[in-house]
Length: 151
Picture 1 (cartoon, rainbow, N blue to C red):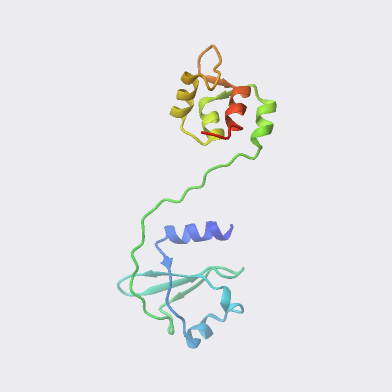
Picture 2 (tube, rainbow, N blue to C red):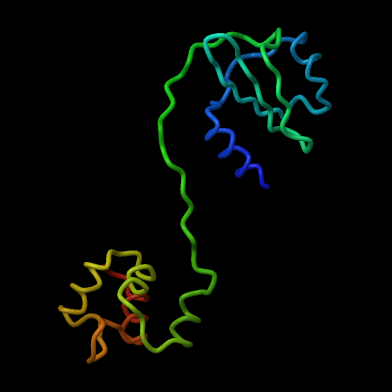
């Protein structure tokens, strides 16, 4: 797993980033060879504090109620879902050469606009549709819009 996957998993488990300072005594408990690369997370309950570090290759290091870790006020944590968008791996210029027709959602993605805006451009005549349903747009008209400098 990558460090990003590890961080997302730790956040899902209820840990939050730890912003406090760690004394030399706390650093000795960890026995970490590369202290400058430590990334600490903390999970607090009524009775204990659990710390997890994702800084080194042998991650994670977990400590429960260690000495030398500064007490910190809880920072509010925004509850957000993290998602990643899949991006095109083929340049648009290649798509225009190898594909004759584009669906509405593909055109919207290429032009970085909404599907509604694509349909509006078809109604305006800026994009040329296929004569049959469902709505498909010619590569030539889409490429012309893609290369257009003024919007």
